Image (cartoon, rainbow, N blue to C red; front, side, top):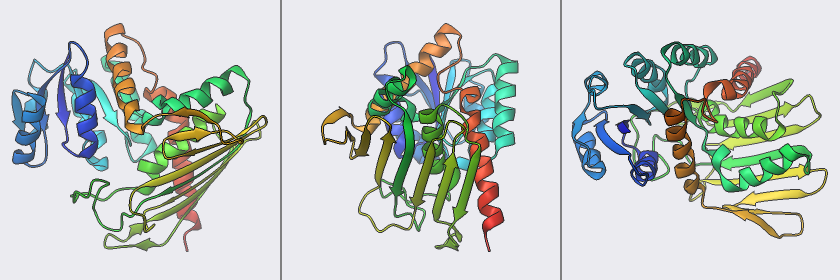
Amino acid sequence: MRFCIVGSGAITTFHRDALLDMEGIAVDSVVSRLLPSAQEFAETCHADFATTDLAEALARPEVDAVLITSPNRMHYDQTMAAIAAGKHVLLEIPMTLRLDQAEELDRAARAAGITLMVCHTERYYAPNLWLHERITRGSLRPLHLHRDWHFFRRENIGWTGRRRSWVDDILWHHGGHAVDNAVWVFGEEPNVARGLYGPPSGPNQVPLDLSMQMAFPGGGLASLVLSYNAMVDKVTTRTVLICEEDTFTFLHDVLVNHAGEVVAREEQMLAVPRQNREFVSAVMEGREPRTGIPELLPSWRTLDRLERSAIEAAP
């Protein structure tokens, strides 16, 4: 299977390494906003072709699949173009910034017989898999999930310190990870979803703070707090999952129970190879991937409701 990689940002390097570590996988081409960036990244992939023109890359018959890691607002159009060209798509989160566009991508991929998978990497992360397996078999009953996720993103600078040409979206990007994780943990779509934005701030005058509350039909609660305003040296997240049988705290890649015993640990980016292998297997086997759009639409409907709630509540 030969890939076209669209984007050359920080997360793309993890995808590149994961793909090239798989037998039978190669990178044919790289597309980026600036040609020098595309050429430089193509060299690291041993790719034959670099361009700023996605259509030019999609026209190459050597390309079987497209990995899209471009800025958020480009995902919908680029994925539609890849589907129209008959290429399978591995798409970084957020798949779109609108619910209706996510639904359109699903319909288009199905009509074309294309495998479309979204990188909800938290669903492939060993500590989350440990919890999910026990919840699914009934040995843990989740009651309340609460999570703090802190970034310092007042300017267009990513987690590696590289300046960006685009503005991030706290709800649909990182909020998308957090909301989907909650929906996955409780195994159902919430019947209550409320969001609150902080005031637009920073050079881009967008909300940099977000609070979300969800209640699930089975009685569970989720409380999620995200900030791009936090003065932290590096991205930090702390998650507590209160269950009927135990309480788990997840911090710095380590999951511990109420007694402080380590029950699972993994460096987060090690989930990327597991995730990308699932995409390749789904393509090869002609089946729906674990994080295909149908599986994720409950989370995207929830994000849509949270956004509407936050906008309505804004002064």
